[in-house]
Image 1 (cartoon, rainbow, N blue to C red):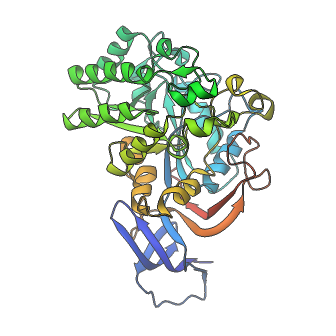
Image 2: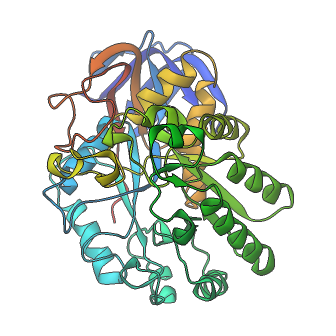
Image 3: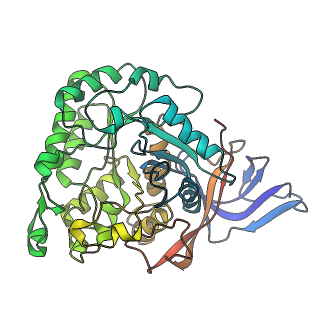
Length: 429
């Protein structure tokens, strides 16, 4: 076939604020003509009836975990990337906590080479985060200038994906990275204040007999980072925001003009401590799910743009690792194949968010946070998009998921809305 023609599909492109029914031609890895109606010869085209379906720019995940190298029994890199494509993700930023850690150019290059050697198309562009500290342990700086100067492949930026407890080291990191012009991500979390907690502090955790994590475990660390950013003027992305107070502090920081962006995870928008009282180990997260007021503040924060982006924080575990008591379960769940559908069903379908607002948080803004041009559905642009059917129902199970990891609260549940196809003509490393 010479190309693909999508007839009367709903095109949603947050970068251009487009949301309308159009015919879209894809040819030679690029978008061709896009118009309300295209009168062209279709003899050599694959024609898709787009009625009732959505064509959206590829999704961009700010941070997730790769089990390869080091933990392939959980999920291989091929599984991870197949799941990302199945969920509409065309760019995938990977945290440095692999084994070995991504704390030097050689380790980063090996991960990128592993992805490039996979015989599967399409596949997402893999964007590894380079570790801020050696082995991502928060004790000693990596060779940050060397990592930031990598140019023969693209890194997401500099991050550990773990809290940095040493405040002197944190200040030095912010001072040192100020001139490197690379995205830097920090997780505001005070492990000492969190203690052995596994649920957000409050009446629900108390009622459920779950050790609580103080809101201050997030906000004390967040305040420290914001004060350092105010003094040093180093741009920072704030990961895994999970509390109403955290949203409030970020809103105030942005109003003051501090160079910060923020993200929360998809599950912190969909669930709260109330749901954790089911003791489902697949709702054991770090940071823990917030109380209902936290959840409401995060939802409002995404809609208002205070929380810039939604991250997936995909974390695969084996059945044996996750099928334990709630307090013993390692925190984290899989989500790349499920997030867009679940968020659409929860927020777009009932009209709480517009489709554009959801895609801004999952595609446009994450790309900009990574200092990348966002995917767009415009004439002559490289094709990086997915086709979504909001009406199609499916059951989440071993047969429908690409990953062997099944640690998700949606297992054996029915979802409405499914990604039908993802197109991506990747930039070669």
